[in-house]
Amino acid sequence: MLKSFEAKNFRGFQDLTLRELDRVNLIAGRNNVGKTALLEALFIHSGSYHPELGLTVNAFRGIEEVRLELGKTAEFPWNSLFTGFDTTKSIELHGEDTTEGTRVIRINEMLPDQALVGTKKVKKTKGSRLNLEQVSARARILRLQYEDKSGSSSYDLVFDLDPSDPKRTPYITPTPPNPPFPAFFLASRIRIPFEIEAELFGRLEIQKGEQDILQFLQIIEPNLKSLRLIYSMGKPIFHGDMDSDRLLPLPMMGEGMVRLLSFILRIANAPDGVVLIDEIENGLHYSILPKLWSVIGKMAKKYNTQVFATTHSLECIKAAHQAFSNEDTYEFLVHRLQFSKNGDVHAVTYDREDLEAAFEIGIEVR
Image (cartoon, rainbow, N blue to C red; front, side, top):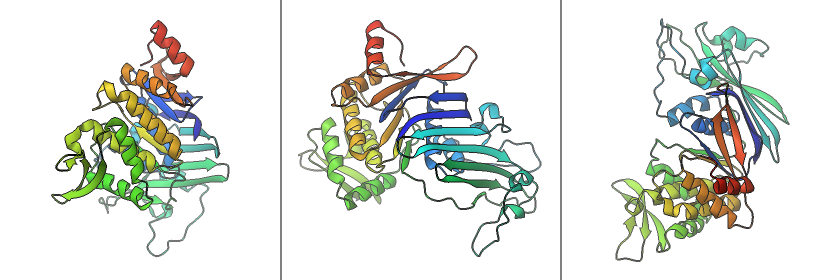
């Protein structure tokens, strides 16, 4: 579990530091201050070895098409990751983990000649991708360097704009290993396909963990007797038994139940990992927010999952504070991002006592 995090030259952050993190962390702040960007930095850091996550986070914002035009000055799809679109500076993501120590990721854009400096020649094996010595001078490379207590490694995302093969697809070399722990990003703008939710539920059924999902959904909807996955019109759709004559599709119970199911499915599928939720209060009535946070807190503790979420809502912050105040341990922090006088973004962190004082005297924590 991360206990601190720092992002340098990433999106709008020249140097943002969160000096203290807890099991559940709520990120607040005005529009365009970088709340979603902080989740993206944490997601890339959680992926550890995979440079393509730099493009994945753009897709979370709805920027899914990658188009590179030959013969024209065009920005590469990763340029927006760098502060001020300045790719001459290195992105650095530092995380201090409670068990694994410091994990550092550095991301740089490189030309082929730069990327080959200090690298060993790798023979091309059957079925392998091209190595860096085989790319053209037009190639651009996004290099991710990963470092932890066991050593360091680097992985390259290569776009080759060789005119002789304009349709060449990007590739990663060498093939990165799986991340050291699971991580999920729930974007605010993208609806999750039912097939993905069904797969996550199936994983829990194999481990006989589906009762946990039902139990925590019942905190929000006590009349829910069971949860079943039924194929309808060729797609898997969750249905709930509300002790009536027929099962009811979960979407018919409201967007809040669908959103809550998405949250807890990912927390349960990320033991010892991370779940990141953008605009967590979307689609949820303020009256159920205390129960929502109670569910998230209990699930995160049960599965040893660290949760980061963003919000615009003071009601959401107060509900979370209320929920965690009723637990045996208060494992919750609010991090308010705000602009400094020089235009940089910094974080102000509120613990239990700080929040109580802020609410009492009316200090803005959103």
